Length: 327
Ligand code: GDP
Image (cartoon, helix red, strand yellow):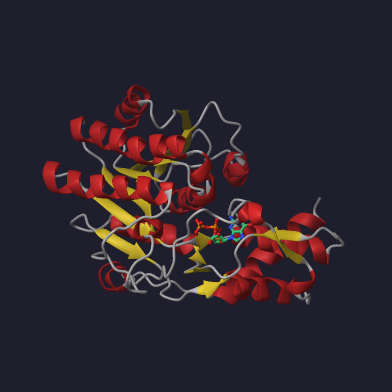
């Protein structure tokens, strides 16, 4: 049975991916940051399973910029596949901590590529890239050939990492793919991302909270999909005979207002009564027109996103309601 290494295993995608790979019979190794007090709650159910944790699921401490440690872990675990998810992933925060963002998201990826290049047994790699690399494109449906014109520190770091992955594939014959993912959400989405912030607030207000929901720009639009479907796409990329880059997206974009409508409708409330705008959540520079064309993933990987915006908002609000009721 294959062995996988996941960087960023404690995040939303890392936790869904671990579940998917364990279900498929993989042994899974995950990298965890020692210095942070990273919540591991998304992996709790896997830890609780005695037949999994430290039997088929192993965690290792390593910072993304610690090449020596990552090399040692990769040699010891003899991974067949590497899923590179880790990095500072909050676009808004990347304006406050651009150096950290580049250190981990850009240089961390280059260091990983350098390690893989030198390994005797080279695992297959998928790097989880982002629609942020396109910034403000000329056309509202982007594909794998759309030029990268990032407009945020996170997008710039991701563009560097994405292009390095393609370069290492072409120059050093690494099996290395980019999964260029548009926003993908779930009940496990970090609480500072706008969808989860909204669904948590809708659930809290429906449960009696009188606190206002403070948001930045409501006009922004995003192509929002459902995270478990996206990790399936990442896995499929590594099962192909050749490495390539793929867009994972729904092909439809919605505004924050539309997401607010969908989320507050679940609890029979009007969001306009509960939302206030707060300049603190406005960004110095915003992407626009980001909608992905996932035709290539559909035809080669057989990957099609299923979950629509309303259903996504519903399942997130319901999970937040359940969480509140169990407190
Ligand atoms: P991103 O696409 O990775 O930046 O995902 P986010 O969920 O962080 O942000 C999506 C969009 O929502 C961006 O255009 C933000 O400017 C907008 N937005 C509006 N209010 C908020 C807020 O309070 N928090 C966040 N994170 N984004 C907000």
